[in-house]
Image (cartoon, rainbow, N blue to C red):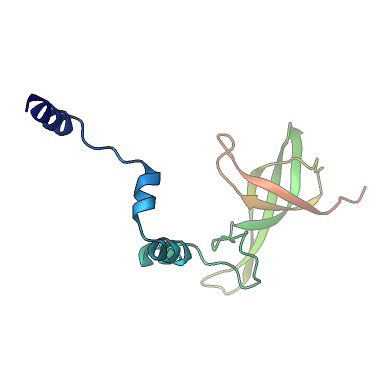
Length: 146
């Protein structure tokens, strides 16, 4: 009688631990085969949150919707290391006189291509690289005529 009480106490203190093999052996073979064959479905919220793949069928690469600002200008200074000053010209119609006025703006751009003064370059907006540098040279469109 003491042994029974002692076993009950041990069972209450140490719960019964069944191994994976014992549980699998008790399950019927029909249910395990059906569970293996059934595909696992994801919730509808996670499917809707995934980005859409491009129409070309390439699922590994997802393109961004937003484009970075691009400008085309002429290099006006290349005196700094890996930095050029690009002058961008644009024509704006005057609000009163309706005549086109030429506006100029200078941008400092990071240059890995080695652009020289007079080169026509394409610059793209990027994160702040220094105190005044927020643009990067993407390509040299036309070399300067020497």
